[in-house]
Image 1 (cartoon, rainbow, N blue to C red):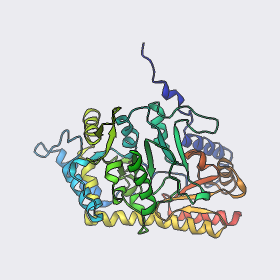
Image 2 (cartoon, rainbow, N blue to C red):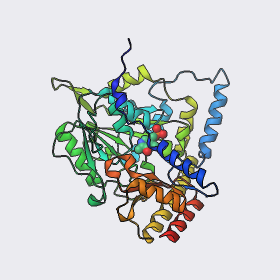
Image 3 (cartoon, rainbow, N blue to C red):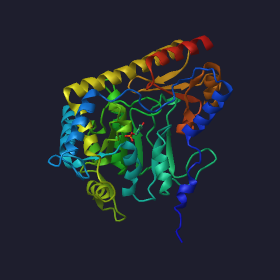
Image 4 (tube, rainbow, N blue to C red):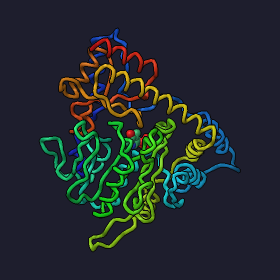
Length: 409
Ligand SMILES: *Cc1c(COP(=O)(O)O)cnc(C)c1O
């Protein structure tokens, strides 16, 4: 008899985006003439940079010729891509990493979800709240989260609330937490930590032997100078942090699937005798056993992001989204809303007026101005009373959405 992993049964049935889709479909049936503007999408919409397209066409041609054909590649990724990453993403920031500390992946979601396999199920874990749902859900699946309370919180998860009240700066815990997930720039709030604020988390981790899993999927959107692009800009972070990155939001790779994870040689976890165990060889072993590498064609496409043309094209796309973010942020501010994010991230985090709940505000925007958003509570209990808008849409839609909201209030 095959016994099920009953932790899967604890996962909350309805996924946020399917609930939204249902409500939007119901609206469309009763209002077939309405022109909906979708500001809820978490996916990019601009096509791939031309440099990536050309590199991938070339790579496909190589695959068509037996002299240049590529079969299985290294599980850790090709050296050409790893070298480009080290040279462009880290060396200019004074961060020295070795090629064997970089693991090319099929995206950040897989790695954020899988990295917990290296850690015992009975570690305690902490997350900023609200946050990208994969961190909690992947820990529920292996039984690390405990049980769900009436307040929507899991018993073995420490929540670090990020709200208007603390200016979205999470407080350092006053007790020990074994594993902490940080995502900066943040999805969904679009907020960031300064160098000094992030340093407090690294110092906490060093003092408590905590492992930080740092999700830097939105690193390319950082504009302000005092916002760290990598956790390894903080002294000591290599001992306590794994960093996860993605080309999805950077270069429109959501449909291509490529990212990478940094597991420094110095980063440790502990056995029950308190013996320090390096995680780099364990992750290497895990990848070699369960992952057969990202496709050659995709890695050639990712490499092209780092060419001069690639860099220019990536910047144009990000500038386009960030102009959308500016239009929405400033327009909503002028209209009297409390607005956060949108400066170093493609997300706007909007406080609902008159203490409306997330879902009430979502429905009002849908029915009264025909705008689709994402209810903040879907990202965690502290997201209640907020909405997320994304800058991944079309500029004209962003302008019209703001016009509609202006006329509406
Ligand atoms: C989009 C997103 C990812 C997923 O990236 P993929 O590389 O496409 O899997 C990871 N983390 C955060 C916070 C994201 O918003």
